[in-house]
Length: 465
Image (cartoon, rainbow, N blue to C red; front, side, top):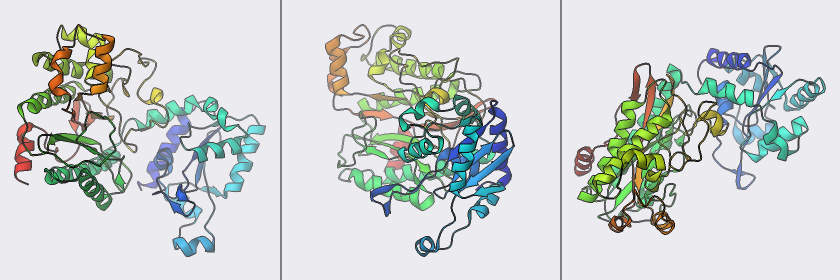
C-alpha cells in the first residue's frame, strides 16, 4: 500500500469534485467461483476501491459522506470458522486505519445508512458495476431493479474519478515502471524461447510464470500466436514454424496492481525475410511517429491519424496501397490493415478505467466518438495531459476474411491494390507496442530498458540466445 495520507488525500479530492453532495458508494469485489463455490478464481480487487482505499481483501465497501466530510469502511470481521481456513486476518478497523479511515461498521449497517439517505432524499453516487454480483448488491442496497442500474449511475462521479486517476503521481509512475520491468523480462524470455518446434503454449506458460514470480501475474490474458492477424488471439495451440512470425502481446501486474502492456513481433527462426522486414519497418516507423508527436495538449486522435498516415505511405511505397495518403486516411482506407486505435490509457487497469466507461475515459465534450471508418475504434481520442500513461501500438494485419469483404463490396478500391495482396494472405500480422508517459516537454518510454525493437536488435538478441 501507499501511505494512508495518499488514500485520504485521494478521497478528499473526490469529495470536492462531486458538487451535488450526498454519498459516494465504492464497493470492493468479492470472491468469484470458477466451477463450484469453494474453488475461486484468483481474487482481484476492484480498481477504484484500490485507488481510494488500497485494500486487497474481499467483501469490503467504501462510503464517502460528502456533506459530513466522513469516510467509512464497511465489512464483517472473520469468524473462527473462516480463520480456520484463512489464518488470522486483520479486523476491519485495522484495515481502515491503514488507509486513514476512522469510521467502520459491519455490512448490515451499510444498508441502514443507505436506506436513511434515500428517505432523506440524499443522492447516492455510484459507478457502473461491471460484475453481476456487485450490480445485484447495489440494486438491493438502493432498492433498484438490476436492469435499471445503468440508468442510475452518477455521471458526475464517473467524470470526477477519471479526472483523478488519468494523471499518475510520481509514486504511481514508480509502480508502473516496476510493472514494465516485469514486462521486459516476460518478453525477452519469449524471444529466447522462440524457435521452430516450440509450442506457443510453452512460451505463454513461461512468461506468465515470470509475471507470477515477480508480481501478481499477467495484466491480461497473454496473446502468443503465429496468427497475429487475429487481433485478440488467445489460443496457444500452435507449434512454431520457420518462416512465420510470432506476435506476443503481454503485460504484468506488479505487487501494487499497476500494469504494463507490450507487444513485439519477430520471426520464429530469428531472421526477417525481405517481405517481413518491409512491413515491420513500416509499423516501427508509425510507432516512432507517435512518440515524436505525443505531448501535452495534443489530441491522441491526431497522433493516431499521423501514425496511420505513416502506415499508408509505407504501403503505397510497396504498391499495396495507392493514391494520395491524406485522402486515403480521410476515407479510412488504412482500416483494412489497422482496424484498431493507436492505444489506450494504462495504470491500475491495463485498459485504465474502461470499466467506468470509454466515453468518459477516452472521450469528452471536445472529442465525441466518430462513426467514421478508421477512427471509430479509437479507445482514446482526448487531449493529452502531463501524467497520462498511454500505449503506442500501431500494427499492420492481413486478415483474409476482411480483405475478401472489402474486395467484394468494392470498398476503397481507389486506394487498395487488391491484386497485390495475394502474397500476403498467409503473412499474419505485426504489432509493436510500448508504454509512454506524457511529460511537460513531450513524453518518455516507460521501463528501465526497452525491449529489443529494431530489426537489427531483434536479430542480434535472438542470435545470441
